[in-house]
Image (tube, rainbow, N blue to C red; front, side, top):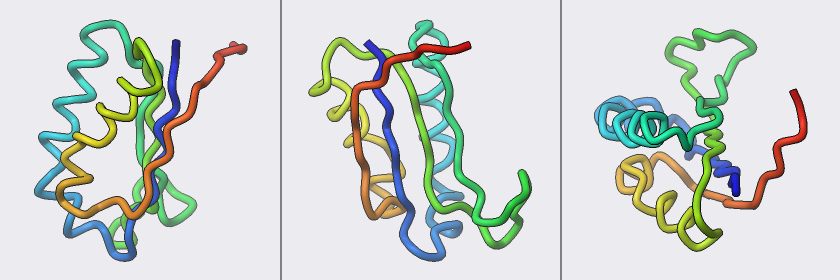
Length: 99
């Protein structure tokens, strides 16, 4: 089943994101390579794909896991969590309907 991992950043998270990004992306690439990643990406702080120094307000990952517990454990191990980027992470089941 798919699970949505909805993360909200702390204020001014960009300096925390940058050093943790390679490890964060590596985990997402592993999900992609396993065929389990539906979509992933950050929420820009400004209405543009390139927010510059304004950075991001959070992230969304939708991926397939065996259970809600497995999805939560994966989310808890995110390098952004360890780096203090996220102030809150919510994990919920997701049912893909369209396209």
